[in-house]
Length: 363
Image (tube, one colour):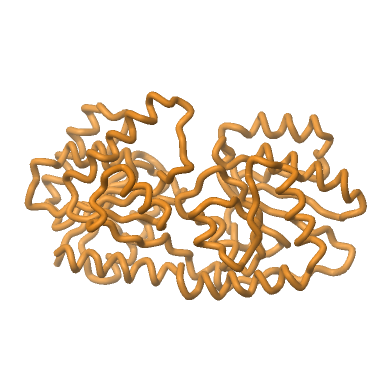
């Protein structure tokens, strides 16, 4: 039985850890011996509940000696055929820790960086990017979750012959859902899903919603944001300042996101950067029309399933939303295109199939 270790720098259930969980469950179901290594968080419990071996490892800064020692001990003891590192933190720490274990095949997946992504501290950004290039030195294969990520890795000196593009997989549960038809007079809901952080750009979305209400005061609409994060207080202050408390609602983290999406009429993602756009793909799977930032990863994902915006221009965002609100036929057509596109190109089944094919090639 072949042994695979999946090492994640994030123990939450956000995009990359969810991807790790999907791969781990699929590997177990396909007869592999699987170990998931990550920091403390819900990912560990969910893996255990699914009968997957786990090890908790701290992953602090780039020179976290405790992490290096722990990861080295775990991987050396488990002695996998493949060690698959997910994200720059796991890649940097994990590959330093295991660089002397030369018999183990090492794979790296980049879940974050594209040409649009930047850190608030330019000096630390350059340091992290230099560390990203270091990762490629010790791998036999690298995975990019979109062409935008692949292009960025190649621009940073990665060996293009080692890179395989394997998009994130959308869970089948979203494809089983459809938008709920609402009676006339019921408010239309514009929705977004994602962490309340700088990159997700909710400030401009809230401003855009204010523009919509001022231009079209008779529209019966609400804006719902599913997510939590460091900018929650700031966003709530902006909502209050614009007197939007009855129209804009931050729902926090919720279970059954797909069921909530069914109540949306339009899904909006105005992110400044996305490596893939998991929430957008999930909304497409449900059958929602999309309004998305005009960035490479989302253009590749969405294509005919939505309209594209300049995320830095709230007025442009508002105009595209109004366009879709006024055209129900276009919304339905885009929703159908998105559902079919997700099913054919971005399903969890497709992602698993391509990942297993790469593992078999490496082995």
